[in-house]
Image (cartoon, rainbow, N blue to C red):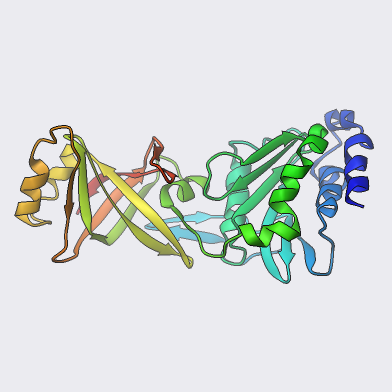
Amino acid sequence: MKEQRLTSVVTGFDFKLLDDPEFGEDSVREEIILPIIKGQGYQANGRYKIVRSRKLLHPFVSIGCQKRPINIIPDYVFEIDGKPCWIMDAKAPGESVIKSSHVEQAYSYAMHCEIKSVYFALCNGREFALYHVSEDKPILRFPVIALAAYWENLNNLLSPETILVKNHGHLNKDFGLHIKRLGFTLDHRLTFLEFPLLYIAKFNEDHFTFANNIVLDDFTYCVSYDFGQNVFQQLQGKIPQKAFEILSQPNNDSIINVKFADAIYFINVECVLGEKLAENDEEIFLPLRILRLR
C-alpha cells in the first residue's frame, strides 16, 4: 500500500502544475502532502492520527521584557496514541521553506506547550524540508519530484513506528537558537533580572562568557552570554574582588575559569542576540551578547 501511494505521488503528478498561478497552498496540501503522509501510515482516525488546522492556545510568547505574537494554527499535527509527535505546514509553490519566516512560524508550532515536538516540516510542492528544533538547518531536504530516492530516509525519521523513539518529550536546547527561530533579531533587547552567576570564563582580553539554564513554558534551555572588556569592568563590586582580580590577569594561551563555590551571585543582564554561532564537541549554539550589567 505504501509503495502504491509513493508511486502515485512521484509518477502520477504533473509537476508542471506547480508553475500554474492558480495552484496554491490548498492544492499542495491535497495533491502533494496528503499522499505523502498517508503513505507514511497516518490517517484521519486511529492510533496514527492526522489532525488538521488545530487551534492552539496562548498566542504570545514572552521572553524577558519582549512579547512576541505567534501564529497558532498549524496545517497538520500528527499524533500517535493521542500524543503530538510532529507538525507540518504547507506552503504555495512560490514560497520558501528554507531560511524564511515560514520556518520560524512552523518552529513556534513545534515548540508550543500543547505540542512539544522535536520535528517540524514544511513543503511547498517543489521542496520538502524536515527540521529538528535543535538544528539550525534542515536535517532532511529534497525536491519532491525525487521523493522515491528519499522515501526510506523520510520513513526512518517520521513513520509512526520510529517517531516515538526519536521524539523525546523534554528538551534541553540552546536558548539563543530558540529565540532566533521565533523571529528575534539584533534589534530586540532582552533583559534578565537576577540571573544566577555560577562561573565566568575568560578566553582572551575581550572575550568572557558565562552560562546557565532557564525554564520557559516547561522547557529547560541553556543560555550562554558573551561579553567584552567594557562589560567585564561592570562586574567590579558585583562579584568577589579576588575573582575580579583573577579574571583581570593575562590569559597566557589558556582559559581562565572562575567558579563561585561559596555563593550564588545574582546580576541583571541587558543583552541582544549574538551574531555568530559557536560550536563545541557536543552542540552548536548561539550566545547572547551582553550590552550592560546592572
